[in-house]
Image (cartoon, rainbow, N blue to C red; front, side, top):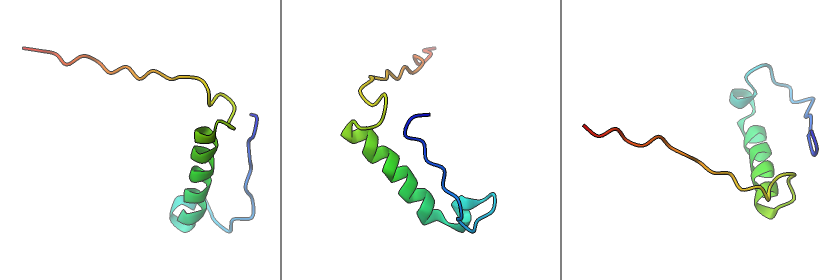
Length: 57
């Protein structure tokens, strides 16, 4: 995957979101910032969210 990053040496187990939440938050912010700035591959693609129509009685 382009621009992928593998973070090691976190001193965490399988629950990194509980053991090192700031690392997870920083990583998510890094991705969001890259998408917003247009530097993330595919950031220029437009995504359409379609929700099901409500069922009327």
